Image (cartoon, rainbow, N blue to C red; front, side, top):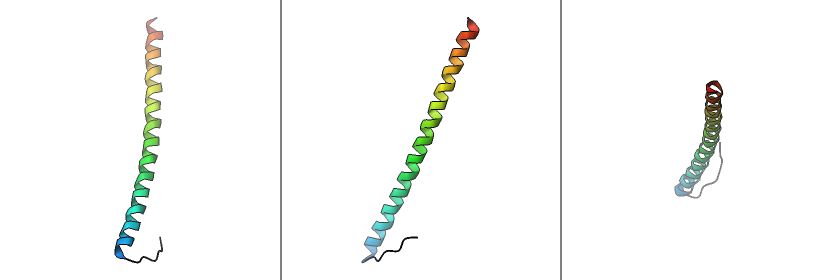
Length: 58
């Protein structure tokens, strides 16, 4: 995966913690985009349902 010449075990630990943090932030960003998309779809659908109720009532 990664090949680095570490001077100490602390450097190695820090390197892998940093990579893990980057990966988790990437996953979080991806999930936030998906949540935003689903939320927008829900809002549009709710607006359509509300609009259709008004049209049926009239």
